[in-house]
Structure formats: structure tokens, C-alpha cells
Image (cartoon, rainbow, N blue to C red; front, side, top):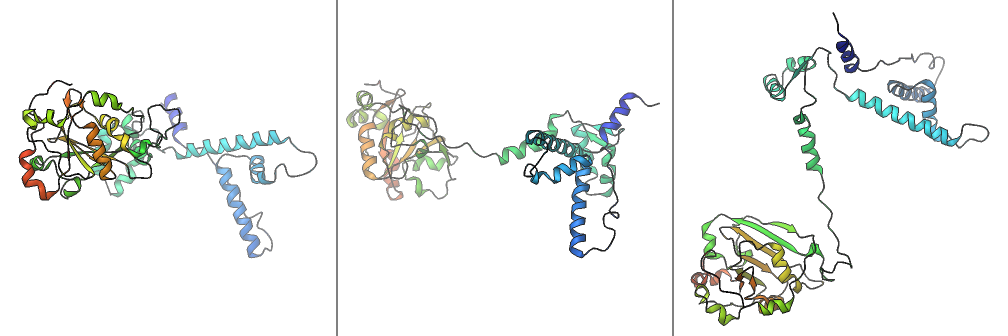
Amino acid sequence: TVSIEQCKSKRRCFAPAAFYKPFGEEAAGALTLSQFQALQESNKETASLRELGLSDSEILLWKNRASTGKGSGLGAAPEATQERLHAIQEKMEEHQRILALPQRFAGSKQLSRREMEIENALFQGTDRHSFLRALYHEDEKDPMIHLESVYQELLNKKGPEEVQPTKSDPCLCPSLAPQELVAEESLLPDQKEQARSASLPETRPHQSPPRHVIIKEPVEFVPEEEICKNRLSEEELRNIPRFSSYHPGEPNKVLYLKNLAPRVTMKDLVSLFARFQKEDSPPIQFRLLSGRMRGQAFITFPDTRSAQDAMLLVNGYNLQGKPLVIEFGKSKAHLPEADSAIPCSSAGGNPPAK
């Protein structure tokens, strides 16, 4: 006995029938090679349209769609003709979708994702696997079936476009676009880097390359008045036991920041130092260290003058309860003398903000 469900499944699983019309009647008689080739190409196009489920009148209308509306005299309304062409196109697309569905027997066994993986592993690369493929199928409702398509979609997905600043943004400097603020984050697993924390970033060839982070959202600058009210002088920094031997170092375009609070983010650094970005100059690079080097950062300016101005303004600023200690970056030649002056970033207390 056959149930109604089995009959419905047979109708769903098999492709619709096609109509075949012989080619001999149209090609009868004496024809040149070019005429025969043109007739053959036209017949192939007609056969392909017929396989898509179109009738003879629809095929004729579709093949003559280029000349539709150009003729003079009586005829169908252009709007009606366009509606028919649109309906024919939808019919063709639906038929192609049906033909693209997987073909299988009505009684094929439904396998779970795990069972399908085992089956593919057992018969991979054999003729038996291709022969038995129509006898089983994977559950279409299993969300893991679409994992490959989602994976490919994510790989092919382009990154979001850069957000351009507008004149109505009160938080943005007019000469500073968000994409000009290039931030870097890196993980330094080597403990030896602790002794070299004040060296220039470009003097570390063995360090893994940092990844660039583009800050797109508007950043509001901290007012200079607030910075001046909440900062310590160099003498006050030296009164702190941890920084008794503090020395700013030789001026260059790299600033080394330490004693950062644990919750300081890249946005906080940008709000303090991005004001020194100039037009027609390379972007300021922010590099916030993490891991064992947490609490430290490097900021690379386009020129030494900008770095000096930034140090004069921001050095000693109380950022989230901890005074910001800034030095100029040291080259490798100065590392042996500077090792004793580099404190551990996790030690010591914090003086009250002034």
C-alpha cells in the first residue's frame, strides 16, 4: 500500500517533465552552413526555454522582447507586454530554483548531521559513495546544514565603510577625520619585554606585528583647562616613591606612557592626544599594550615638536585616579642605563589627584 504522504513526496522530489520537439522539420531542405548553424542555435535556445516550463506563445514573446514596442500599428499595450515579460521571467527563475533542488528517491533515508559525516568519511572518493548518494539525504531542518554557506558569506563579506565626519559633529576636530586615528593593540608574552618597555616600538623585530584598530565613533577631547587643573608637576611625580628617579629622556617623536589605570581604553588616550594631529601629516599612532605589559602604551607622533607639546600638556594628568607618567621613547643604546628606571606597572599606590 502507498500512503498519500508518499505520493506527495514523489511529486516533490522529482523534477517536472519536459517537452521535446524534433529538429528535423525545420532543417529540411538545402541550407548553407551559416544558415544551418543559425537555425541550430535558435533551436537550442527554444529548447532551453521550453525546459524552463514556457509555452510556445511565451517563448515567442520572450525571443522577440527586444523588438517589442518598436513596431508601428495596432498591438498590445506596452504595460501589458511588460507585465507578461515580467511574469515569464519569474516563471523561469522559479523553474530554475526547482531544478536546482537536490534530487532523491521518495524512500531515501534521512540522516542526521553526525550520521552524514560518518557516511562521507567511510565512502569518500569511491564509486559506491556516488552511487548510494541518492539513497539517503540530510535533514533539511538541521541548522548545521547551512554552516558552510554562512561561513562563505562571512568570508566574502566586506568590512564596513569608513564613517566620514560631518560638520554637525561637535565632538570632532574639523581637521581630524576618524580614520586618521590609528590605534594598535598587541600581546607581549615574553617576560624579557618588561625590561625593554621604554624602547622604541620599531626596535623590536622579534615582536609579533600589532593589529590596527580604526576608531570610527566621535571622540570628545578633554579640555585643556581640566588637564591643567588635574595634573602633577615633575617635582610632584618625583615625590612618589615609585617615580623618584623619573626623567623625561631625550626628546623624540615617540612617547612612552606608564602607570595607566586598568580600565584605560584607546578612546581615553585619543581624547587626550588626538588634539595634536595636524593636517597634511601622518596620523598619530596609539599603541596600548596588554598582557604582562598592561598599564603601558606608546604614542608615535609625526614630529618631535608635537610629542614635546603633548608631554608638556598631559604629563602627570590624573587619568581615572592614577597620574599619567610620560617619558620619551628610548633607543636600544640607552636600555642598559634605563633598566633600573623602569618600574613594574602593577606596583605602588596612587596619590590623590590635585
